[in-house]
Length: 486
Image 1 (cartoon, helix red, strand yellow):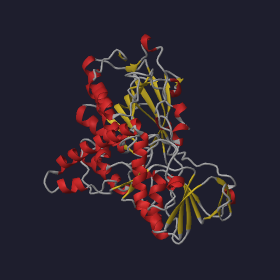
Image 2 (cartoon, one colour):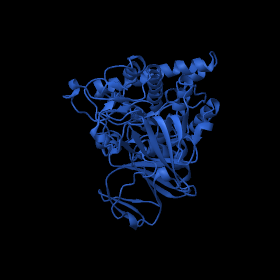
Image 3 (cartoon, helix red, strand yellow):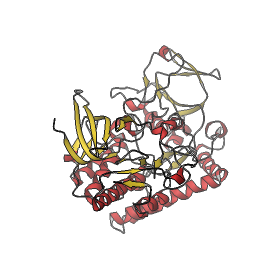
Image 4 (cartoon, one colour):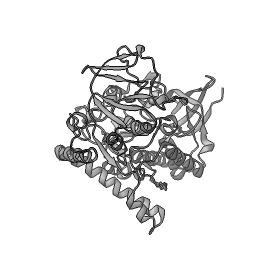
């Protein structure tokens, strides 16, 4: 059977995959490529999630691509606007013709003899298998499972007579008008859902086991709106992007060096929103330090406004059990509910749930080391895009795509067919560190053992620092004694 062959296969047609395709066309114009997408539309997260109020929790000036200005007037943009931005990028770049929809990648097999990947696919609708081959794989499938959303098993949950909803699988026909709703969780999804649903429900409760740091964030940039009257749009985008990137890094660094000062600053902001009599200690003062988990951006303070107006409440307690009519809490309180929404995080995965074989050996990525946060020891010709947890995802995705192009062009100039990172003798005593350090979010801690380890020095690091990564990926020599070309 003849297998169609490409120089590069990109897995995933979301924000990362479309960006990778744009960079590849721009910097490696002779390369043939295909984008394999398991769903029937591009957009990834921004097409999959359809719950009320779905939006970014990063500013669009850094969440947008480095090559295409975000021209919308929203700083924290809604999901449909982000999806349109991705679609527009693909259309302008002629990327659409390279996308194969409903093509789910199930496993990939590397042959050292042939120096190529065999990519095994399945048609999402019919189940029909397929095979394509490529020289290089760019994994842009994100960091969570589309097929296995996280849904905890709550005590006695079958007793509840209403619907129990996972935001990742939002029912199109869900009617919540005039209903009593409980949203379990206190992360970005819950913080978005509660104020979006509040105007239409009888009552809505955000139920959390423990508080999360939150900060009211303007939905639109006053600086951008001012500069747009004076300067071309791409100038404005780059100016505001530069300021936002530096503010992100400054705030994160300050939070690490002086967590109590940042804690006080964040809590004062919430106190200002909710008033002096609100029980801040119980509901908004986390036990962990700022940026041990992501800080939730509250768009225009909308969650705080709904609490002030009595349209929503926050309850901090533990679930004892579900009942026919709601939830019994450990405190003895009962929450009445017609609908319960479990906004309790995602199921993280490695390589988009794709099984990876290297010369018939199935890879256990938990036993490998990361190279610059995008390649893995003993896995040839494969890069995986994983964005930042402490800044906008796309900042890292753009750097990864640029580095992929650097490596491909270097291979062409030297005649190399294979590139793989390998530990050197001097790396044998490296300290072993988790893939993401100093980040305590439960959805990550559940899965960290599945990811490659970090070392204690470059290039065996996943820095979560744009400026360090920019130097490492844009400036450092491709030939570094660690990457082995053959």
